[in-house]
Length: 204
Image (cartoon, rainbow, N blue to C red; front, side, top):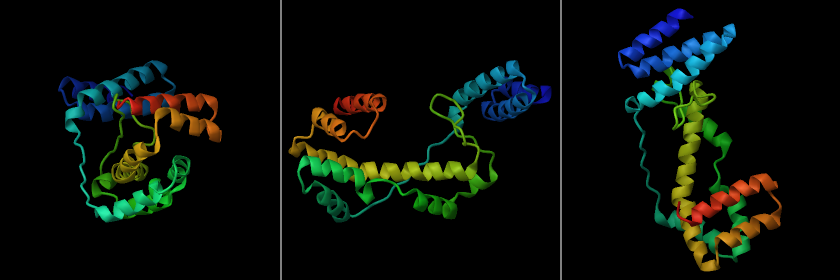
């Protein structure tokens, strides 16, 4: 236990924060198995701190793809060719507007990068915390693939559909009224969604 923390501290003192993250993570696992609450707290805090300090060692992956406009317009126009309420209903059920997990999982299994198979992996949130399941390379790549698919749907379809909805009287009030009328969400959840809708229309 002491050795892992010493390795982490040596790496931290040498400003090798990327390595320090992994040493503190190893020490955290040992501390948990021993029920050492003081070391658990120390290592958790250090993992977050080292992740923040090592952010320059991480690189973003940028992927570009091109889809013919006529194919995008075909989907968008098929959704926008009705009144507002029918259009909103279509958005909730249209097969092009939500990722299909089975297909994503199959695609991820076939296309997992070699780096995910051989490297020690950690997935961290923007504030430095370890993401649950983020050390499982298969799960992490599935989630990355899911995120890319969501981004594709938002960029190519959702943003254009919302632009088209402005001509149908689409507003913050009409969307909230629609969701309330369908009784889909519990009140607590709806309150959070309403806040998000408010920020969307405020262009936040």
